[in-house]
Every structure is written in structure tokens, then in C-alpha cells.
Image (cartoon, rainbow, N blue to C red; front, side, top):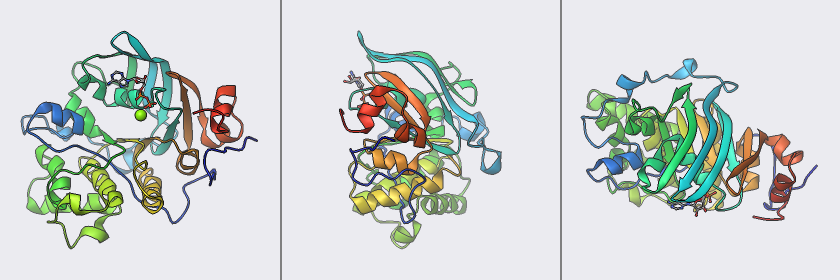
Length: 317
Ligand SMILES: Nc1ncnc2c1ncn2[C@@H]1O[C@H](COP(=O)(O)OP(=O)(O)O)[C@@H](O)[C@H]1O
Ligand SMILES: [Mg+2]
């Protein structure tokens, strides 16, 4: 039994009761495609609706947690001549939370960006290997990255709502992806998304106020609502709680625990305690390599690799 020392309140197992909230980030919309590629929101109506490209699978027809949603094989990433990731292979289950842990600079964000092709937006980045979602190669020429980024939502460390109303922050994606056919339906999508992001009760009487008027934790839940609104299948969270206080963090963790019933969630976290609380599977990265991956409880109580053990016990990182 290894005792992690990096976090004060290490607690393996499912997310604790009394926790709830999250942070999806998307930058300010401009009118260009690059922006849309970053945000997963399409820039104009010429982009094919998500539903037209991919039957948006919902409810019980989504994969069960023991089935593979995302599969990476031999993924290497280079920034110019520098190799940042080496032959990463992992199966990420659906309807489940997978945590990526490891010291800064080990390639966690780089690998996340392979899954929704955000590395395409970094000119010097070059990706090798194969990433599949539901068995489909995400790098296939026929895959539209804008559509892919709606299917694979991303949430970042710093919440960054559009400079628009709370309502418009959530309505923007469904509207440009053609996911709602009229005002009533759009209203419904906005409400449902805000409810799923555990934010509705706090904002339902102020939907016309700016998203930026919310607290940091609420802004993170707003960006999660915005990601949810375009019917994602996978939600990637890159240190979503790093800028939040403990109460807002707890709300995000509770929300993650609820969302996993519907989505494949990947969370990068520097908090060992958070990984232990929210995830079912944990992957430890070190120096660009995926050192060890397994059931979260196994990784934290019985790691097989000495580097994993050293990291979770606070010897480096
Ligand atoms: N846009 C970029 N251009 C050049 N190098 C980068 C870029 N993004 C990340 N890197 C490098 O790739 C390595 C992995 O970085 P990153 O994926 O951000 O690690 P982590 O998220 O684990 O902290 C680091 O050496 C980092 O400096
Ligand atoms: Mg990172």
C-alpha cells in the first residue's frame, strides 16, 4: 500500500457526495474557422450539422463503460524537431472517467489535443499514430475537425465564457450546428444543458446577463453547459479545477461524477486526491511516455512501475 502524500485529503473511490460543478472553456467567438476549431463551435452555417455527419448517439444506445470509446495506438507528437510524446497507446472507456496524471511537461495536454485534433491548430505540431473514436480514425480526411470538436468537447483550466449573455453562451453552438429548429427548441436545449451542468437553478432568472458576470466556478459550469449543448460524446477536461477554490472544485467533481453516466470523460489533474475521487481509470505520464495505466484504485494502492510509485508518493513532480 502506497500512501500518496501530494494531496492532503487522498480518498480513493467514487466522487464524494456533496461535490458538484465543472469548467469547460471556449474562447471568445470571432468569425473565423480557426476560432471555431478551437472552440468546437462551427463558424457559420455552411458547416455540416453534427447530426448530419454523425448520428448523435444518445441515451442508452451509448457505449457501456467497459467498452472502448477512444483508442490510441503508437501516438507520437513532435513540436518541430522536439518529440513530446512517444508511442502512446491507451483504451479510454465510454461512460466513465479517466484521469491523466504526471509532472508538468510530460505531454498530458499534448495527448488530449490529439483526441479532438486541436494539435492541428499548432503549426509546428506533427502527430503520428492512430486515434480511433468508436473505431473510426479521427485523422481520416473525411472527418471535419469542427464536427469532431463538437463530438469531443474540451474544457480548460481558465473558464472563458464568450462576452455574451448566459443564454447566448449555451445557444451559440446548437444554433450554428443547426441542432435546434426554432426558439422553443433552442430554449429547451439551453435549459437542458444548464441543468446537466448543475447551473440552471443559479442562473434561470438572469439568462440575459453576461456570462462573465458569474463566479469562476459558475463560469466553468457555463463552459461545460456550452460543451454539452452540442451533444458531445467525449468531454476532455484539462485541469478544470486548477483556478477554482475548494467549494467550486467540489461542485465540479460532483458534476463530473454525474456526467459520467452519459459521457466519456478524460480529466487531466495535478491533484492525486481528485484523480482518486473522480476517476475509474488512471494513466500516469512521464517524460512523454505513458508509463502505466490501470484501474484508479490499483494505480494508487499497488502501482507496478517505480516511477508511478515515486510520483504518487510525492518523490517528484
Ligand atoms: N505549442 C507548443 N509548441 C512547442 N512545444 C510545446 C507546445 N505545447 C507543448 N509543448 C512541449 O511539449 C511538452 C509537453 O507539454 P504538455 O503537453 O503541455 O505537457 P503537460 O500538459 O503534461 O504539462 C513540453 O516539453 C512542452 O514544452
Ligand atoms: Mg497541460
